[in-house]
Length: 501
Ligand code: SF4
Ligand code: SF4
Image 1 (cartoon, rainbow, N blue to C red):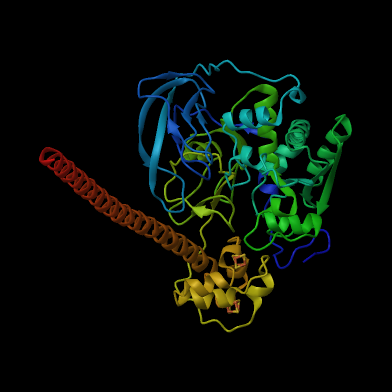
Image 2: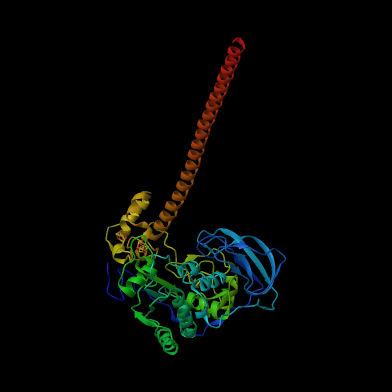
């Protein structure tokens, strides 16, 4: 299906609350004494510690290595001593703990020797990808997918269009907006590097029409940069969730990513502006990814803003720095109010996927149960993935996960538009998150039991084959014995006949 440029189905017009955090330039976050660094800050396998407790490390030094193809290394955000490697609470919707490396800063900020590249065009696509991987770069829009993989499409995929995502459609979040305003030249350098790695002809930088300063800054940076090739800024109407990858592609190109498919299936690759900036720094300065811009905002902080924050910095240090007025009944959210998740503690560390810390004044919680579905259809109208949320709701409530899958449960991007508009206040997206997790858990268990069955069947087949081979060997031995006995008797008989004659 094709949509008119700038549009996608459904979506919402939300109050932005963006000006809260765009009143001042990006600042350096306060320096922490300790940094807690979770080893799993990306999609895929967690990285493996390559340091031990007691080791002295330099800023930017690799402290954990990639464990698998879908994995990236982790680097020290400052110089200091490794004081602990153990399970610690991490910022995650589950509220669970995971393995973390704790670094105590020595205050020296002493960098490891960096290896910048003067002219990236002298590097092959493979060398660029390897450097981007070694720098630990993952998608900074929130997904955390290792970026080098998106720069390595399979041979049978041809990339026609590179889309740089400068949308930032969730209310309150402004880190990408401020980065585009202040670092447009470096973002454009990153685009040139990605274009070189992908050999792509066309690039579109998509920005919503509520960020005119960012659009102007990028247009000026493109005009200054020679040899960039066809690169345009496209300003699209502000509508949530325009920054979600599939909706972005619809809005920019009018094309639809097939159900269960990826953008590369229609020859498109998307990268976030923050990721593009990190790629430029990794190649041109040789710097690994050790920090990111984080928006700290909400009505429960006195001085909201955007902060260049080293990974592992405790959130409460940022909150204190911004004049937090958070009380017991207020909410602390990582991400935006639509797709973010509540943090149960304030001392959790900033990680690669954290674009915003939202300290919002708590509204009195409705204790009433959701009302029954009245089949008004508002959720279907709002759904940007063209799903039927009320049907999905029936099936997930009835725990009929098969049927929910048939209704394209896995195309749900968990944007929350359906819950937002539902007059019965049914927390639809929570049902869908639960159903997806349940389905994936069941499938993983099924795969495990299938593998166990295959292993058992293979063993049985091997034992049966061994039995057959053993029986065959016994038969052959018996036959050989009988043959040699027969031959001996024949020889004996021949000897007897000879002696008688
Ligand atoms: S919006 Fe709510 S009440 Fe209306 S159809 Fe959807 S689930 Fe039912
Ligand atoms: S949460 Fe899922 S079902 Fe609900 S509107 Fe978003 S994509 Fe559609």
